[in-house]
Image (cartoon, rainbow, N blue to C red; front, side, top):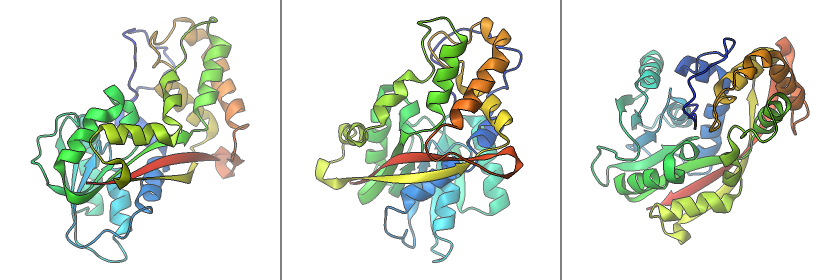
Length: 287
């Protein structure tokens, strides 16, 4: 989930453990809103669809699918797969509580143990950019397991309001030249990069449509949100956490909060929370 690049074992005492539950609290409704925005780019999901939620995590994509079919009452089946068994435990809990037409199985997205031509729709929600080789190998597997005429939906962030505040906090609290967390994310902002990944995964250029969508998300109380954000991503560069991060913890959190308030689309709301604006690149590819 938080995909650290380095091997450092040091963790500041104030850092919250990066569990699936913390991830759910951190992302709030953003992952489900992203999935909804992506599903809105395709025609209604037809009756009898066989759907793959690849890298399903705790179930944001599946929740969005279930909401999308609620009005039509289309009967579908959903298979959620993820390499993280702890995330799948939460997914299964959500599936049982919400009566999703879904099952979950631990599986590596780079080598799916699923037959060719299985799914009519496959979704990779906030997924490709956390994978090795820019997710190309996962796209190849998604292509392989799609039925002819089936669709793949994948997305990336063209703009995220939280990355610059995190990097500003890192610059303000760490020695000059220290690698920044998530430096590699910037390449995902252009839609052309996402399209190129999908093409390299096997989809024909003229069967790929790129869309952009604004996604508005609500945070928890802002100090807690900044603490989760810094805990989850602050130590993910190639050098990991520095021992000085412990002494500079409060300063980093304050910088994150101050910089978030300057971002495009920021809106303070009740309970000390905020609304943040994201912009998504969405690829719709047909096999």
